Amino acid sequence: MKGLIRIGSVWGVAVRAHWSVPLIMLLFAYGLAGRTLPVYAPGWAPVAYAVAGVVGALLLLASLVVHEAAHALTARRAGIPVRDVTLWALGGMTRMDRPTTARAAFAVAVSGPLASLLLGGATIAGAVGVHAVLGWRMPVAVLAWLGGMNVLLGVFNLLPATPLDGGRVLQAVLWWRTRDRERAQLAAGRSGQVIGMALAVLGWLAFARGASGGLWLMVIGVFVAVTATAERRWAQLSMAVRGLRVTQAMTSPVV
Image 1 (cartoon, one colour):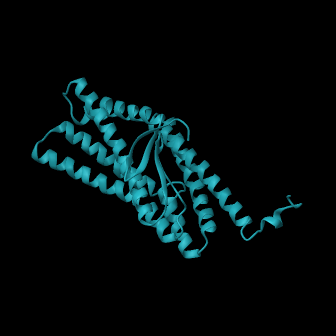
Image 2 (tube, rainbow, N blue to C red):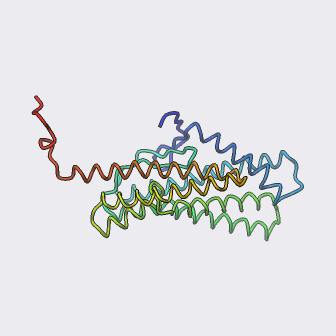
Image 3 (cartoon, rainbow, N blue to C red):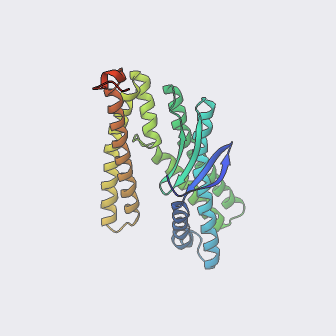
């Protein structure tokens, strides 16, 4: 992926951000400051909403790093080499070698959503605590929004659709049951195609009814469907050449 900038490292793993990350964070900050916070914490000055919106967007970015860092740390504990973590407009991805066992693949896949759900629950609990003890509505609104976003991130990523984490979990389970990695990848890719197109249709219907967020859902759905299709083709190719020698595929000897 081009246009990457290194922003730091976690446990020795480089963390890079695509140029689209500042743009999407700006959109989150604008939506939080202009729509969400004035509803849940009315009566503040515009500059206070702007600052809180930026803080909330930066905390969300940190949450994405935590999600991907969970993948990276679990992979390292399983002995899987990890290259780097990349953040971009549709979330993040951790580049690593392929797991050698279904158990390792399952652990790596489920670690990210689990981290997001735990972080979301802790943040929501923090919002409840701040509201009960201090009653500060602005921090409570930011924490509640952040907690909800993390829970949404964890739940959405558990959808059984490759390349989402839930698709990797499905693939690991099928790999364990069938003892066939490529067949499991083929089934997970098929699930990703179906769910991706369903998300795209739902997004289009929501956008047609005036919900601007539907456009984002439609883009995510198309991305999931296209990526799942590519993974299915790769699995089909791997199954087709399984056990085939190079000499059997050659039409003439190479000098």
